Length: 454
Image (cartoon, rainbow, N blue to C red):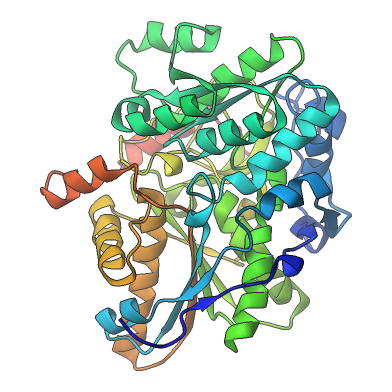
């Protein structure tokens, strides 16, 4: 192992005190959410029956550039923030690349992923409002685990609908949520009308994030003193995650460099927005020219093969209609191990930025992602989550391109979580049993049939 300094740490007093709201700086604002029944533009108050009131206001806020982090949330951040920025010298050496590779290590949080940054904020706002019960969905389990931890911290009860295929693939994620006190149900389930409808139509359905969201919203809206919390996609979630990029800015300055490219895996957009938006504000101001790359699975390629349309965020049409790149809310992603990326749509902010060419998406096959994850583990000593493997694979592509073209770039990616509870996925890869998936054009067209043309 090299003797060079690898880790850049921030003292506690330099943990951000505000989140960055990129909507205030966007020259073209995202198109409005639409009411699911009237198709009229929504106001923040229209979201109150589902979400806590403060997050509803943050969702629609296109004015305030900086939003204060509550002291109670920041105090809990201090348990694990600031997270390290690390120069990946050993990975660079293995790739024989002139690129300088850095990663922001969000795997050091108590729950092993970046998801806690928003979970603590949402649980705090629910508690402050007098909410006693919270519902949510989870794909691979990172979000459900984070919210279970956060609800326990603020004395709230939590019910989690976990996508059935992940419920079976990742039993220890389920155990973690239960350890923190959450009730976990495989989705689709017979406990909600939305779940019953899916099971009636497709008894062997393995579930999707869209279905699990429908179940969680249905429970929230039919239970007194209960609100729904979402782990990605929406604007307020990406807002809370900007603590990642705001720290990384300071740490890149400590390293004496600035990223030419910022890379993150992409499911709904929370960790991508979290690391990218603070750096992107300099592009919007015209002072920098950083490139932004969102790495999604080839099996769920909304950025690279989806269409920009109004669509529901869930299977049953309980959510507002969102202007986003989508594969259709009825699209059923393949059963890849990166369960957190198996979502049909992209967040509305990221969708608008993609339309303007301010970022680009790349799709990564499952085997390519795990190949990169194993290389990262063997060089940097961290086993990455299957989701994070996509960001690593995209970074490897860029680093090899630098080698081939004989030029040096500074690459920064977000290590959104560790994979120590995902070793069955690594077993499949190492034994040669992992299968790549890519939907056909016909499958994508069928999924888009229920979306609304713009």
